[in-house]
Amino acid sequence: MGSLIFDVQDVTLRFGGVVSLNNVTLHQNRGEILAIIGPNGAGKTSLFNSLTGVYAPQEGTILFTNSQDKSISVIGKKPFRVSNAGVARTFQASRMFSAMTTFENVKIGAESHRGLGVVGAMLKGPATRRDDRNSDQATKELLEFVGLTSQANTIAASLSYGARRRLEIARGLATKPEVLLLDEPAAGTNPAEKIELAQLIRRVRDEMGVSILLIEHDMKLVMSLAERLYVLNFGSVIASGTPDEIRANPVVIEAYLGSADAGVAEETK
Ligand SMILES: Nc1ncnc2c1ncn2[C@@H]1O[C@H](COP(=O)(O)OP(=O)(O)O)[C@@H](O)[C@H]1O
Ligand SMILES: [Mg+2]
Image 1 (cartoon, rainbow, N blue to C red):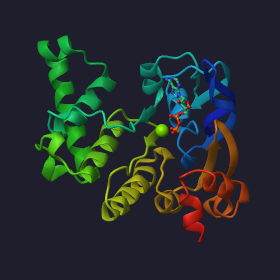
Image 2 (tube, rainbow, N blue to C red):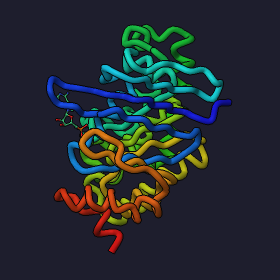
Image 3 (cartoon, rainbow, N blue to C red):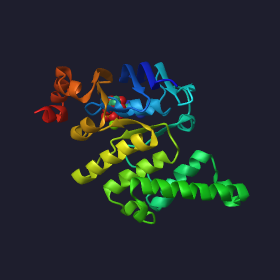
Image 4 (cartoon, protein in one colour):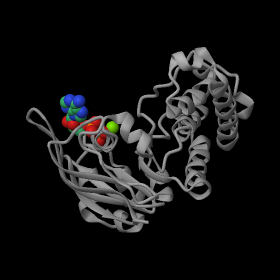
């Protein structure tokens, strides 16, 4: 079993004259909770999009290796292929089906993973009916895991921010990933919800064995959760290390002080 789940080498992504990722080299160890931090516009979401097949960087390589030691080269692969290989993500701006219930939102994740099309779901042959029971069961277990059982029949739009963030995590997990990419999972939540989310994210790794790759602006949260971090600034990796190493790194403090986003500096005080 390879120890790296993601191996990113010399990745450069450009949009016309804008360089969103500049020669980015980084890796994630299997089972690690890894974070990407950096000021707005640093390239964090571009990196996630590149790791999931949404963007195709012009230069470099991105290798994803599953627990069976099978590697895929991500650049040039369609997002659904990358997802089927074991990479799941949540989005910065929530993309739920807000008119559906909590239960339905998670079940869709489970079904899309199985490749059950709309026609298959309508025909409901014996195999489909059995699959249907399986995804009902999987959905129930996931809602239990994220603490949303009592809100299974609540319309997603009326959930609290904290509950919505947990629903997004359940949807990501429904595709049975090996790594879960979380883009600002605590956005819009209150301090109590942030603590709950941090606990949930840690349980996803500890109890489900899913590696976590996290973008998060809340420095307290990210520093308490991540085992290692990379700092992006203007598309380049400017630092990497443990939370203690990052907090003490003058290059990082300078990058944050030079922007409106003084989270790291604030936290170091
Ligand atoms: N689809 C796109 N088209 C043009 N420019 C983009 C696109 N996606 C990202 N960028 C640019 O890449 C840079 C990094 O953006 P982004 O990855 O969203 O940063 P972050 O998530 O760190 O705030 C920005 O200058 C942004 O405008
Ligand atoms: Mg972003």
